[in-house]
Amino acid sequence: MKTRNSFQSPAETVEQIIEALRAKDLDAVRRLYTPDVISFDVEPPLQHVGVEAKLANWSKVFTFFDEVGYELRDLAFTVGDEIAFGHGFARLSGTLANGATTPGMWVRVTYCMRKINGDWLIAHDQVSVPFDVTTGTGVTDLTP
Image (tube, rainbow, N blue to C red; front, top):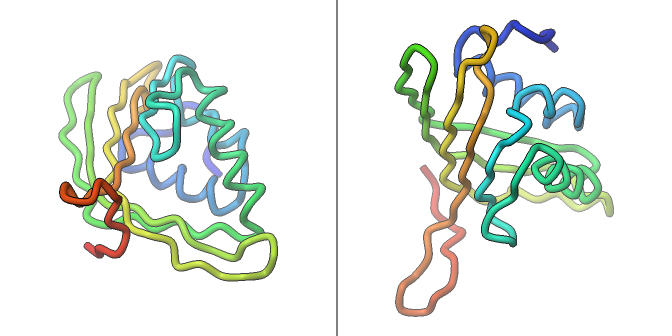
């Protein structure tokens, strides 16, 4: 795991997220977000405000999963001097605490980052699932 002040590109920050999630390391996850991050995650409420709220979501995931798998595809960034945004597809999978395995589902993910003291940190993220307009239910069997 890299130390603070070493996330020289948005892509490196995302790589560190993936490593931290697979390691179930909340402290490492914390270092990747701004303290005032706003997260539009797939579970209620509509927004999670602040890094503690974001960490509470990941803490739940770490409780449900014995082993965490996390995959990201088609990630693309647009990078400015101090602001960057990226989008791609992510899938959380793994072995649940009860021993069952789950392949997870693909979701759309967007990262908005700010460069702070040389680090690219996540200031906003959004995870979404497409939905069927006619039924109002999420469509969870799509693949990139």
